[in-house]
Image (tube, rainbow, N blue to C red; front, side):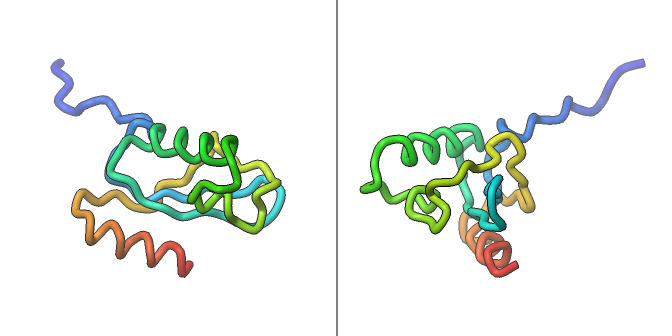
Length: 96
């Protein structure tokens, strides 16, 4: 029998997503959106935190910047190719 469906894409390889990163130590979280692969965006967040307090990452400027984030369990509530729609989905998820 011939398989007609593609293998699922791992979450960290997905593009055009809205994502939510939760803090391991409190109820804070970061919601964002990216057109790049999620793993690329996560790597950028980690670099921003490790570099300096002068960076413009939400995670490095946030109220729980001394806490650890759950990098291994990033939630993807929405996928959207259209940038403007993705921004709307990001805002909706921030409000939640």
